[in-house]
Length: 252
Image 1 (cartoon, rainbow, N blue to C red):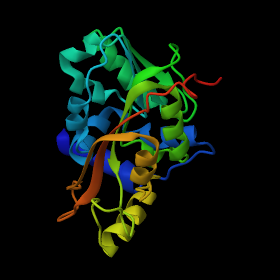
Image 2 (cartoon, rainbow, N blue to C red; image 1 turned 180 degrees about the vertical axis):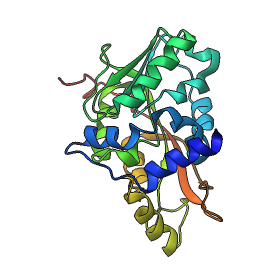
Image 3 (cartoon, one colour; image 1 turned 90 degrees about the vertical axis):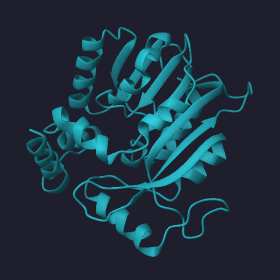
Image 4 (cartoon, rainbow, N blue to C red; image 1 turned 120 degrees about the horizontal axis):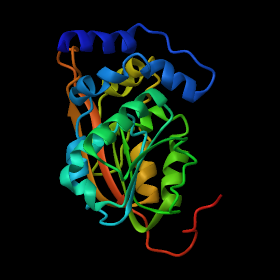
């Protein structure tokens, strides 16, 4: 069953043509046939998620928004902590993945979890502001990723936290203290992932650091299943919104 599930996912990753005129249509075209097998394969592909979740303090009685949260697999990393959170929104454009998320919430009795079909660049929680906003391997799949980060900044409470884990490549001349990648890494991986509409960027980290106070940053590399000797760069970032009253109220 494991091999069959992997082959099904690999087919969609490598061979299936992504169709659709809008980003939402392309997302469902890409994920629709692999939604039920999504979590098992990506548990090995998408590294650093659990470590990031464990380092973000639980906003007891607060609001957590997981942008591009898909199947809600990230919620498993909360463990018993999830009951301490008043509301968890899982925001995604892929309805096939959100259906899996709803089944997961129902199975676990997570009445405080709400899957929402919405654009990460525009979503606002019903409560108006959030305590935590996270992106787990979703920024690389959001065309206007910069607008998604700006929206996270808009809906976060002063002092609220943003957590991001994703693939990336370093700039040719990264800032002091940041990882440096060779020519092959910087050019091969963006080309490799582009066919799946995944775009590792050298600009994620500089943009995040410009908009948030850095609480934690870790840069590493992880193996890619079925590609021998492969090491794909990824980062974990936790940032804090400045405690200011200017521009804190979300716009309509």
